[in-house]
Length: 418
Image 1: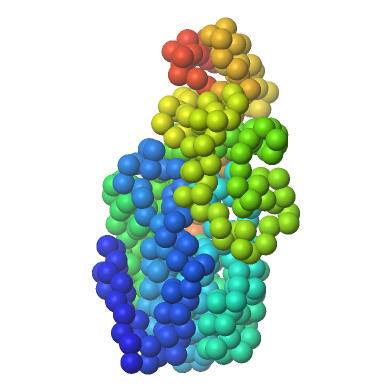
Image 2 (image 1 turned 135 degrees about the horizontal axis):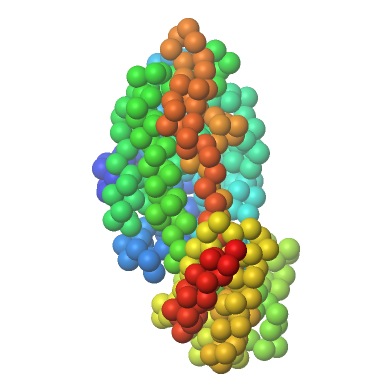
């Protein structure tokens, strides 16, 4: 028998026991090199340039999601013991749901044009170590886990709901963890109340007992605040814009103009032919090393973009409020003219970033209340949650700090004119 405990700053002790087959499988998966690679993928990408404590990894988050999924399942099997048959599937999917993340997590997806769900599923089905661990637990588990992660397909929809829904274990962990690491203190969720309120609806899907309504309202308010205050922070948007522009520039320069090792060369110029080994070879360390080399060796403007990101010499951003698309483009023209007047290249220092966020999306695996008699959508019971369903739109105008004050004056005049 082997017992292992991971000491987590949020969930305290996460203990695994090899005498339990599903947990023995989890221990093997954690020890695999593709999962250990998640230690080298930052959970919040470049957010540490805004919130200096945001250094946690996809490894710690994935362990937390598994822990919450196990707790949720322990609650639900008290209602339906048949769910015990899905324990291995749920454990593996919750642990491996992010194994396909590339460098800098979600920002990396935008930079390189990768989809982490696709790569998570591909690794589950094709990586030898992961597939062997899953198949040793039960034949066919690898395909079941891949189908669940990639397509949300599983015979019991409640298992899918625990992995991907408006109230899943992924969101519960990342809201707590990201709030903790950024020091924002928004994410003080009542996890115990939420988990104790989990129940099974008449259609066998996930529901919440009304006793958990206040805790779920709080959870959705926290999620709204985290998106507005952390995930969609203006400097995060600036960093993402710089990184996307940086990779686009590197690709356009080509292998004759800039150095890249054989793995990064595939990521840059042959991304449709990336194999598993090449995918796993890229992480935050390899990507940051290339940025460092390009800062010193690459031609301008790639070197300048790398310097901006690595030395936190960031661009500025102002919100364009109450402007339609045409007016936003006019504002961008103003910024570009001011940038050129200051001797800077607007193609590499001016841009627009759009955001739209739903605090709650009632039509996408919505949360439902079930009291044993009535089943109803949660937004029909809670005016607060109904209000959170309204989309929040923000557009950022990115520009050099050299023109910031003059740009604000021009935009004020522009707003008054329209």
